[in-house]
Amino acid sequence: MLIAVFASLLALQQPAPGTGGHGASNQEQRPAPVPESEGPKADEHGVTFGKEHAAPGQHENLRHPEGKGEEAEHEGGVAEHIFHHVSDETWVPLGFWIGARHIDVSITKHVINMWIAAGILLIVLALAVRRRAVIPKGGYSLVEMFVMFIRDEIAVKNIGHHAALYTPYLCSAFFFILFMNLCGLLPIPAIGGFPGISTATGNLAVTMVLALFTFTITQIAGMRAQGALGYWMHLVPSGVPKWLFPIMVPVEVLGLFTKPFALTVRLFANMVAGHIVIFFLIALTVLISPFVAPVSVAFALGIFMLELFVALVQAYVFTMLSALFIGMTQHAH
Image (cartoon, rainbow, N blue to C red; front, side, top):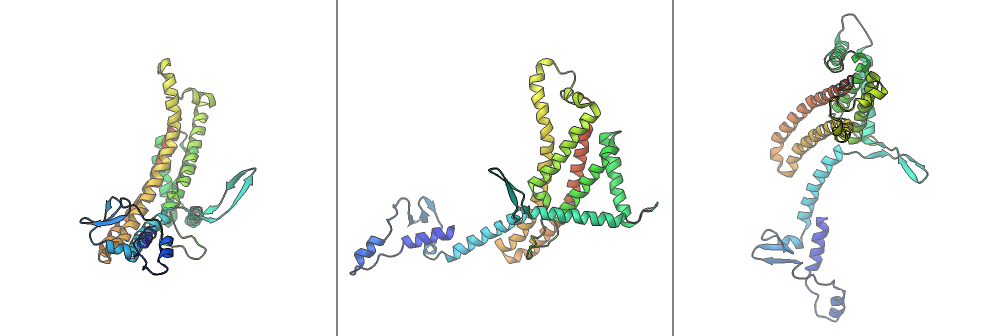
């Protein structure tokens, strides 16, 4: 865009053609002059684009914008590359029509990465538990440690006596989110028909669907524990004066949806932010100077190691909050 602006300014600042026989026709073909108040002009402060000042001596660059245009394009390319890595894109366009409405079911980059994470998860768990023993060893011991922690420290302490009913879901959510977070840290670029590795949990749609699973199970758990009618009758805490019901009922209903919203945004924001920071630190070698490469790479490596920890923490936080929300519905207020 800046190149186009500079090119137009260059065309406007070309010297007038000679006063030959073709001077009149050339003069007629010239574009209308730019008003002095709006066009670029030079003064003691430098060159201005209308009312904005440029640095002194930069008016020559208006005639030769190649350097500035390449630099601006290069800087824009870095930002585009960073956001291209964390953003989703259609890889296999699919869809169908229902009447006049088109239903888009395209396979995107994050969908493929979600399938990859699910495949790796199934393979790892199958290999880890293929040899069961009274005394667990190796990968089986590690998987058992995570499962026991989720059951005893998360499900039982937050849900209570009915924790066994929801432990399978909590374990599934924990391992699935953990593997999606970890797979997104693999430095595998797009090659040929492969879209490359990216974090599926960096997609708002993915985290929203995961939160909707928790939301649905939470409502089912509440109606199962208190009864279909009793759960909704006890939506407002007991003891609240009747005249406050017009206020409390909308607040409590809104509270049902703020819980999955918190799950959605927390997981999405934490995973996207880490990747943007890593790419930006590496891009400092291009934006500033190659001499800062040792420092920027060292900081990027530190953030990468922190991301490994964040991947585990975010899986734990999502699982813990899901158990907490389920546990809140097991008893009337």
